Amino acid sequence: MSSASSEPAVARARATLPEGVDLHARPAADFVRTAMRFPGPVWVGSGEREVDAKSLLSILALGAKGGTELVLRAEGDDAVAAVAALADCVAGLR
Image (cartoon, rainbow, N blue to C red):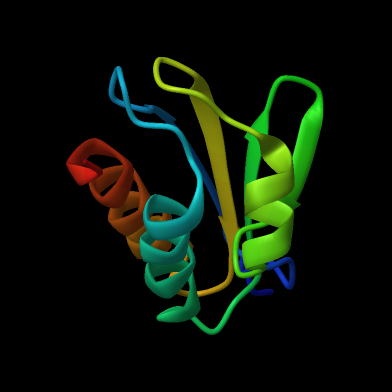
């Protein structure tokens, strides 16, 4: 009997937007480009809202401001790599 699960791998991480960096236009586009590198579904949450991290309009609608904690979530074989790349992206936003 196999112990392998048929459920997709899920990874989560938290990242805080640098002070003075809002998730608008250029920073949001950088974030979305990073999310698009991964084939599986990827989400970002702020407060009670969670949106598709591959949708620029959804990211802009979050209205996340500098200092906001974001919750990153991904599914699939590359879920851990996806949340790690997004956390690095957030940390490097200027």
